[in-house]
Image (cartoon, rainbow, N blue to C red; front, side, top):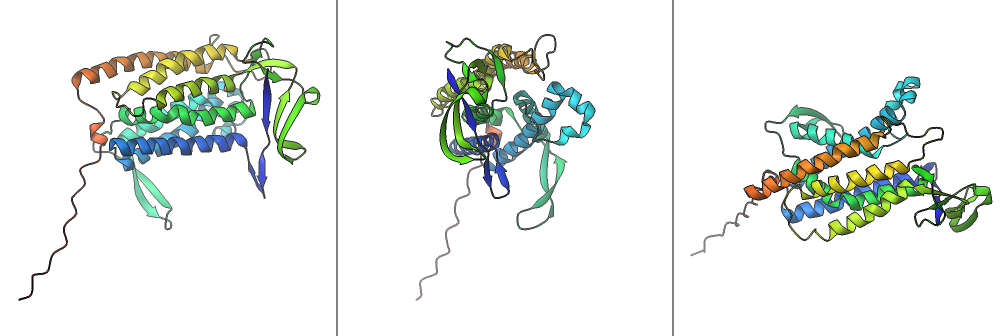
Amino acid sequence: MIPYIHVQDLKIGGLTLHPFGLLVATGVVVGTFLATNRARKRGIDLDKLNSFITWMLVGGFTGAHMFDEIFYHPSEIVKRPWSLLFLWEGLSSFGGFLGALIGIVLWKYFEAVPYKQLGPVATIPKFRRRKEPMPVMPLADLILSVFPVAWIFGRSGCTVVHDHPGMKADPGSIFAVAYGPYKTAEVQSYGPVLDGHALIELRHGSTPQFDLGLLELLFTIVLALLFATTWSRRLTTGTYIAVVSLSYGPVRFVMDFLRIKDVENADLRYGSLTFAQWCCVALTFFGLYMVKWVLDIKKSGKDPLEPLLRGPEEPETPAPTEAPSS
């Protein structure tokens, strides 16, 4: 069986660094770097891309928690309505996707402009409606071309904190994880000891279960490798959106049937399906629509990316030469 991986929190002074948060932050940095690099090579306006990413991330992290509370922990909202604002208490991947979608739709119609300068870098923004809506599909396609690489770090975080435990598995399954009581588990320790535990522990428990974070991590690694082989080619705008939708939707739909059920705090079902599975159905149909959209673009020969390209750089004005003295 695959060992149960436990990674200890890092404490630096009064600051505690959680492995999940560190890995997610790393994913954001890596994804932004790759997207910026690809945008630069394709001649995309980096100011527009950075603005797009900011709106997407703010919407994504806000939606990840709020949709998690609404669809997975509604009773908690009844007890503590303000828990919707505690963005660190729980995240949903599809909640993040929906939040990111809301963020980029708002970016399409609104822009943030400086309102008040608080210092050399801090500024209070104000929002105003754009004169012309911005196209979002081309930038979304660019982001999704590198998204699987960034998602590897996010799902690695889920894997080491085991926040998506699955059903019991056959001990002979290659995907079975050795859950089980820590006291009776065989432990392999690596790194310094912190609060009585090594930094990294591989625990070999006696209860085989599926770990959905690990399963999705393995799928994401395959998808990321396939996408990386296409980065040197110029695919029709929308291709990555279609491929992600038609691959992730069905795969995640099937994976969610392995979610643990008959325990306290099990994920809520809506008509026997989880919130994520209903989102998978919608995502798959959206992917089919995107296939038609991509084919239409290919036939038309007009790339919707054009409004986002940088304008030609103005040539440098030559320095005036002095008239020769007589």
